[in-house]
Image (cartoon, rainbow, N blue to C red; front, side, top):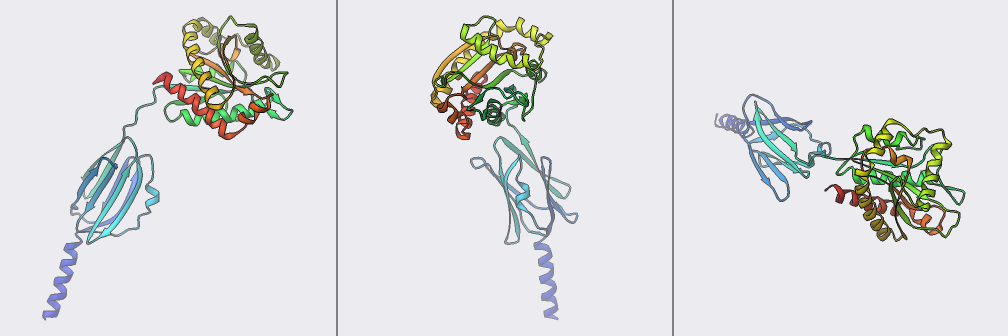
Length: 337
């Protein structure tokens, strides 16, 4: 009889010890739900280490009756989640990502942790224009290096850098042809706050080298006029008509934006030349069709000469392309923030 009483007492203590049984742990949107079986409300303790952004959520007198794949809980809110069974309790170590806050509460007999992203909202949009594309190769260096390929690579790296802090729109993200007049229209439709056109230079003499930045201007030096005429010729070649209403409006507003463009162009040229180790060819104003129609600050960056061996080696290198993108992105951040 005493043996039977002992067994019954043990079973009762076991039931009481594990008063809460976790049958499921799931993440849905911004909510992490710990689902308990039965109708009794579970006991819990919750602590937060702000320095390490670590939540410790403990359910005493509970057991885990499900398998938790911790890898599935890494998302925009959580850096990691670890579940530990110990001494008749279940613990959750929840590490938050940057700018994430939380609130935990019982809902019925489930425990729900709701996460909130407090990251600063992206206020500005940057339009990135990779020059040429598709049937328009742009300049060709040493009969095999195409400008359209080089500038698309730099533009993609720039996109990846800028999207951390900005909304980004690209006029092209693949090897396709887009009319010159359509490029600023894409940016205007996206309500972009800045337009950056990426190009690579070329010259008859292979000795010409360096980086330079252009801004839109009705007046230009003979040199800048030649560069603009060369770039604009690709629009003429492929039947582009560049006197749309949007472009005319862009011309009317250009004085307001010209000063801003000049300041950004100067800082960007200096930063690129210094960081990449290229000759600084300065900034120039010219009547570029691709800049003419944009309603805001705009620049055309010639990242180097595709016809110069020294420049070519750098502007076709992924390492230098990333570095160029980082320097341009830094100037954009400094301009807006």
